[in-house]
Image (cartoon, rainbow, N blue to C red):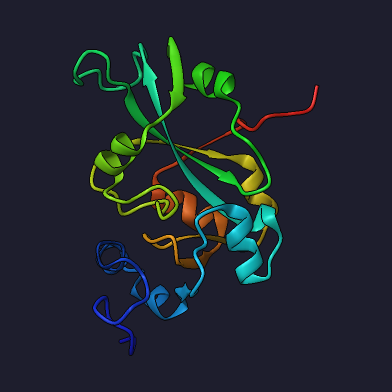
Length: 181
């Protein structure tokens, strides 16, 4: 048993509990908290001392008109979709739209992010969310042995092998990053 418990971890309490429930409590001592925020991928990479592409961003988008997604939301609200992307890349919304078979995909607002995940923008972890969402994980994450992701707050991150992270997030491996044309 780890000396670090969900109550004493630097992770967000809800995320620490999710790690325990997933049998990943051994990650709790590896969560790193920084006095300065690590809300952006660049801030996290600088604090950790790793490359920007070794950061795993957890980004929420809203999709409309996709037969693949549960359409049980209020009219005018998109269905939340989590995209896991390396910190050096940007998400190509058209590729996400095609992947989902959606009519439209946009970046989610802060309210939808909080509703879907239970966390604020800048601290969204790749799993342990308030609701179950479709998860797309960009293949670029597999370029590294370890990536760093938010641990539920803009000040805390944790390391994990990308394949393990994607599996625990329930992610489908896809190619959705912007490419130079």
